[in-house]
Image (cartoon, rainbow, N blue to C red; front, side, top):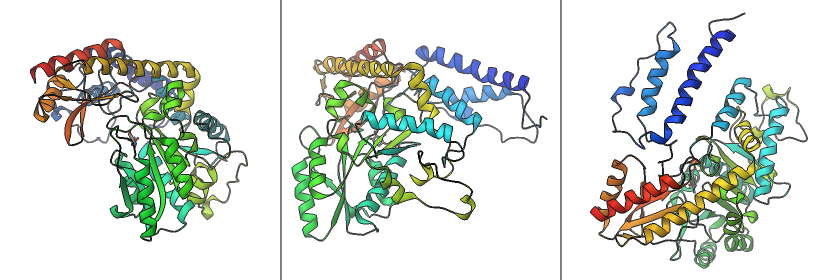
Amino acid sequence: MHSELEPDRATRTLWAKGVLDYLDDFIDGLPDAPASWDGSTAATTTAPPGAGPRPLAGLMTEVATAVAAAVETAGPGYLAYFPAGGLYSSVLGELLAQTVNRYTGVAATAPGLVGLEQSVVRWLCDQFRLPSPAGGLITSGASIATLTALHAARVDRLDQPDPRATIYVTEHTHHCVAKAARIAGCTDAQLRVVSVDAELRMDVDAARTAIGRDRADGRRPFLIVGTAGSTSTGTVDPLRRIAALAAEESLWFHVDGAYGGGFQLTEYGRTLLDGAELADSITFDPHKSLFLPYGTGVLLVRDEQTLRSAFSAGGDYLQDLVDDPGLPDYADLGPELTRDSRGLRLWLPLQLHGVDAFRSALEEKLELARWAYDELRADPHLDVPLRPDLTVIVAHSVAGDDATRRLLERVNAGRRVFLSSTRLAGRNAIRLCVLSHRTHRDRVEEGVEAIRAAARRS
Ligand SMILES: *Cc1c(COP(=O)(O)O)cnc(C)c1O
């Protein structure tokens, strides 16, 4: 029986073709698509839904208009923030997951797909050399993963909320840690901002001093965050030394690898992130360094039980569900109950392309960033202060802050690449990040040329 909400097979095929044809044209058009748009949004307003149906073709025209009013975050010219592109194979995994609509909040309702998701989580734990009883959770992004980790850390180290609880970060720690702390009921005074060295890495001796002073003042230090690839500059903190300090002081050691985590697949990355394997928790965004579409983050923990202790809860209406001894109930490992089946969007690309395809794409991005760094550093109009740890390059115009701002505007106005900016030691800096699976040498050369041309004029 077909109802109006359950189209027959012929209609499904027709609708799917309408959507997939549009997507094929979209993907094929990405190399020539402008990197940004003219800023107008008027055309994207759409009428509210009517009582009756409308044909798909007209709706797709509205979708296309709305899609066009955007920074081209899927395209090869997107070099701002953290580009990932969005793997089509992951989109297909998502289509599968959403169509079969398995319930993965608990293992009992879908042990097959929970098992598949768990195979991805275990593989990720292996990449970070976290042995059993490690575990984790696929989330919507690193911000939620960080909030989850922070709550687990607090429960594990302090049990109850405590206004004396203190967290150690640097000025380059992502603001999602401060946000998570606030959500968890901490005041800003409970966040200790430790100084950084000349290369912007956490000064571990300064952290040790601050912890000692805070203990003497009656505070309760419980969490220290090391960043594996900072947002402004891609800088990696001295993770092994932070881990040692955390162990001395019995602090929970959280590694923010939202951006840098994917590089763990490369030999270079494993060396750079040395010490991450000592973390109590690690966040990592596959929608950054594994090229997935937005909406996928990961939290890994040294001991899965720490998540269960922090999040396990129940209700009478769940009494029919039995625990699977071999598989976790994801609802017990984080704040969500009902959740989509998030494993397929990682599992399918990893299996379909193979891990080497990811490894070599990441190695390519590292090489491109080093090449761009050398080119920009050699330009007399630019001041390029930091050798990139990963694939973020920051540069100032030698003519000052206003010139740096004009430089960015000129480069972006060309609409072949799109860069963002940041501030370093009080100075404006343009920021270029090579990370999309669609960005290759030709576009990086074009971007570097555009920057150099703009720098000469700024
Ligand atoms: C992007 C980022 C985050 C936040 O991740 P979302 O997935 O955007 O929530 C946290 N930390 C770092 C270092 C990041 O780069």
